[in-house]
Structures are given as structure tokens and as C-alpha cells.
Image (tube, rainbow, N blue to C red):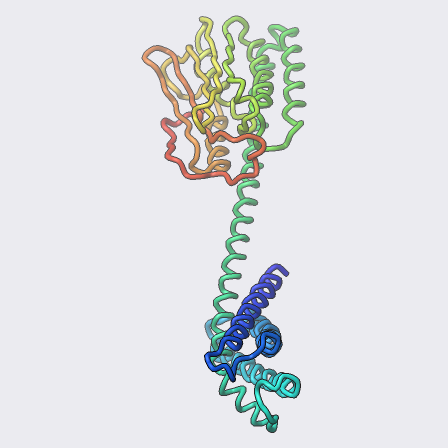
Length: 374
């Protein structure tokens, strides 16, 4: 329907313009005795030309659309197109035959129909074949645009399906880690395990509220705070959590659960590996048109290998989700300082809810520095 409407609009516009141009030429002939009045010239340009060639052109385009140049069927297609061209000659001749007594443009005295048909072939041969060629170009362009749109829709659907699969993978991973923490405490400190179950229940309720793949920063920090509350119960005074969130970033968009695997990485590979207290510092700030997320810990033991029995899903999943959402327009970097400090930094395009429907993935120079697992 969209293709047909576009073809009708373009064809009508072009032939009306051509009819007006032809009428203007008839009015402004150099020979005064041959010049016409505008009313007569418009009748010839619009009625005599445009109103005839508009349906004929639509007929040619519709036929061309049904006869694509396919390998092995070119000869049959040429025969059909020749038949269509012959039909156009006949229809044009019939149009002239019917309207000439009214317009008196083509003949002063109307000849036999055979003569009109002969003149139609002679005068419209080049025009008709030109329309056939332009029709093939037009149909090819429309099909190419439709294919581009179809490919874009398929890619968007594939990206959405992959994000759904990654989210489905991440949620059981997070739940598995949380239940492991509860299992460690249930025989040692039942009251603490009970508090962890309550916190986990609140966290799951919160995470199921919105199925979107992107959430606001304030929603993401509230979600991760519940996870950190669980870890705080498990580690006690060994874990100190500090936040630094710029107020103007609170409504910026980030991938849902982007901070949880970063915080988990800091706790598992840093805080939980030593007996001394440690700090996890989560900072979110704006840098020009980039949103920067940083998770810093001061308890890394010097290597980034996962603990024994770890699945390695969390941060690997994070990188895959970032690639799906932003193409190459993101960066995830790991920096380990001279001491035991380490920083995981994620850089994303700064976008707010009003721009959530904009295209994602504008190319930017960003690379992943260092492989991180959890």
C-alpha cells in the first residue's frame, strides 16, 4: 500500500508539472498566430497529456513490478513488456480518438483509427520505452528501500531477542549468587540470613517492576543498593559502600543491572578475599556528552581471576549487553593501581528519557581495555 501510494503521488506530480510546462510553451510560442490562450493550452497540457499518461504510467509501473528481470526468464519478461508497450500505444490512440472532437488538438479532421494508432506508435515509441526504463529504476529503488527497512527491523528484532536472552541469563546468575550468600549464613546467623531473604525479596520485586532494558540512573542505584544491602549483611564491617552520583545524571539512561556485576566483581575479587575492612566506591558523573560509571574498591588482592567455582557470567554478560545496546559507542576499562586499588569504568552515550527512541550506536572511538570476569 505504501509503495502504491508513493507511486501514485510521484507519477501524478510529475505529469501535472509536465502538462503545465507544455501549456506554458504553447502560450508563449514565438509565432503570435500559433500562440494559444491559457484555457486552451491547459486543456491540452492537463487533459490531453497528463490525465492520459498518469494511468498509463501507473499501468506500466504495476506491470514492471510483476515482471522483475530474473535470470532464466529475461526473454519471457521482454515479450510481456513488449505486449504492455503495444497496449499503451492502443490505449493512447483510443484516448486521442475519443477526445479529438472536443480538443481539436491532434487533428483538424479525425482520420481512421488505424492512422491514429500508427501516429501513436511513431510519436510515443520513445516516450513509452523511457517510462518503462524509469519504472524499472523506480521499482528497484522502492524494493531496495523496503529491503533496507526490513533488514533494519530484523536486526532490531535480533538485538532485542539477544538482549532478552542475556537478561534471562543474568537474572538466574544474580539469584544464584544471592542464594549462595544466604546459604553461607543460614546455619551461622539465622537472623542475618532472614534479613538477607527479606532484602532479596524486595530486590526481586523491584527488578520485576520494569522489563525495559534501560532504566534511569536513580532506579538503577536503588536496585543495586538492595544487592549491596545483602552483601553488607554477609560481610558486616568488612564492607563499606560509598556513593557519589551527580544530581544532573539521576535521570540519564543506563542498562538495567549494569552496576550489579561491577559491584559484585569488586566485592568478590577484592573485599571478600581479605579479612581487613574494604570500601566499594560507586561514582556516576557526566563528562561532556558521555555518562561515566565507576566502581572502585581498595581491597583487590592483585589478580583478576575469578574465585574457584565462579561462572564468569556477570561482566562478560555486561560487555555483551553493552555491545547490543550501543554498538561500538561504549567503553569498559579496568585499571589496577600500584597498591590494591582497582577501578572498573564504563563510558556510555549520555541519553535521557526524551531521547530514548533515538538511534543507538553512533560510532565513537572506544575500546575495551582489559578482560574482566566475575
